Image (cartoon, rainbow, N blue to C red; front, side, top):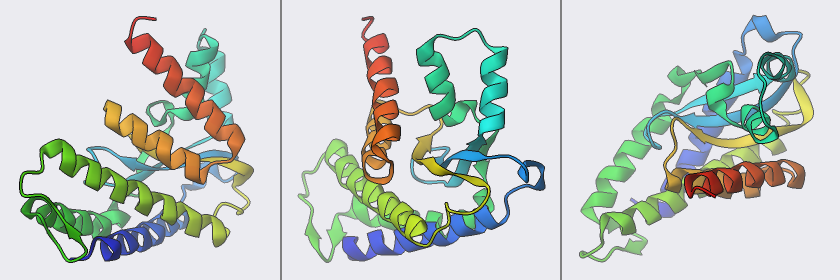
Length: 206
């Protein structure tokens, strides 16, 4: 396997799956405005679906909660607070099969276009896989944007896009930030950094 080929194949597969998910959006939101759309990983990058929310759902949630500004921002940007999570997972089987094959070869350390040190640690392998996933997901969103999939009537003009995880680790949070930097407008990426930096300070007791 070539890593470059895997990244290209995964991006193409994710594009196809996201298009299927968008085409099958529920009728219940036909009059709503989708402001967020993310590729969602319930367990690392081994399973995929999409997560999205609407302005109407966000406003309703904010009205029902006495939240701080940071909490309201987290409500807006965190899939854990969105009404549609892991939607369309059935469309992503091919992507998951590609990742499974990649992971098997990664731990064997045999790629045609990359020499992996036999003494590579799990952290070294995680770095390789992280870079591959960030590149593939970023490229998938670039293609979806180029094709006009987020210019449909249901989406706002500048939707929040990206990668989301269930209960993300510190590495996964950094992946989310890295993808956001590539796929989002400066406005949305600044919002992501506010939440990321706020969570980092909170975890350190600052």
